[in-house]
Image (cartoon, rainbow, N blue to C red):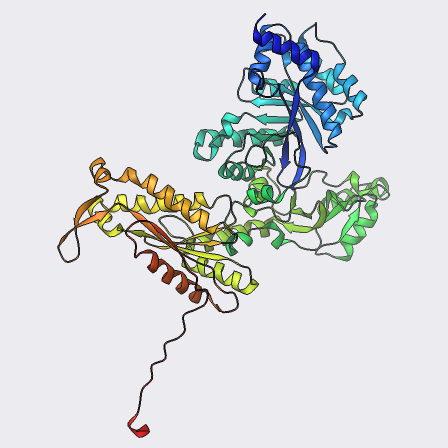
Length: 594
């Protein structure tokens, strides 16, 4: 008997399976949808990792026993931890169809541990080929009849793809990690995700993007309206997972610069406080409200928890009452009979770009409203026309002040960002970043290479700031500024220096890299040795009481940058001075005073 067989039998005989849980986050509502259960063998054993564990079980014909053990442990631990939301269980289609696999065990387990069937999601992986499609459909239908929810796992990685989606009609579709990995840099992956999003809305299927590891990936899927995500960026699998959103996870969602432009793009700023009605309200009473206030064209319908369940439109109600017997048929019926049961409902903090994409993809009538919530409770309405108009105006305004080379916010936005923090007395730091020896490099290697270096510095800076709520601006030329709202400024500045020095080497010839520089002619026509490109960064933390405007803060940072430029190598100068330099008073004497 092999060592692996002995370990496997030990696991099965002693129930030595550890269950890890990875949260699936609903990023639009800042809640946890549920948890995927992931099984592990004994620590430091040859079968600790799931791929090896399940492969050995397949090899020795013990996969059915192993899956049942993993399922039992997952349900038991999920209940013990009192986790909220849904439990996602991975189930192999071949196991479901195996005549030797005991039937009814999952139902027996949830009854044993006191877990409702509608809280369990059966994840059918798409990576295994199933010969008997009809029998699989029959098996899935049986699970549905018992109250379980169905998900397709690893969509796009396997054999049947959209055919399986069409036949199984799952409640959830989990997109394979391959299509998430660096999706922000692949047009093919972007188009695939867009298509899946549109199809999911058309089929009333919820999409889950798994394997999110980079802020850019999260930003892209969020922009496509995919609200359910899981991945290491938000939380790794563990035996003690989060019960709700932690500050680190919310911070991971704050991907864009925290500036005035970005804040003005939150949907909540367009909210109109408007009357609402309960779901039990009769149609004739709602009609009276429309008649009393001619300006109202839509009214939100709420349940007893003040959550929106629909939107009643004046024109639809008027049309029904204008028809023969309209009043007789609908006067005493509740508004739920006529309301739009699927209005667009968004949280007040959702970005207008995301809302706009949802509006256009769902082909909403431009005359309609959307419903805005705060903590899942009704807040108000926003006209679609106002949303699209505001987006257009903000985009134009942003573009007018952006640097044309890097498209980063320019001087106007930088000043506004600093002024905003001075007004609100929010503590911040300011870094002034400048390239050293850039003119000589530009003269030797050409303007195209010079532009590429500037864009590299922009990309490196934005990337270094991606996980923090920082604002990155481009003053012009090779000068940048970063406004830090947290205490990680020094670490990020050092990362910028390290990454730039490493990545900028591609612009030099091997000879110049080996010599750590090159000979060039200065303004006086003299030959001088020029080091490779380096960075000077001046970092200041202005005194919010002493600094009255953005110009004083910028002057502080400029002085700090000048100190950093005294060094021939890259240098971060942390300035201790926090207030404006005292004004120089020039004293003169007059003849009359003598």
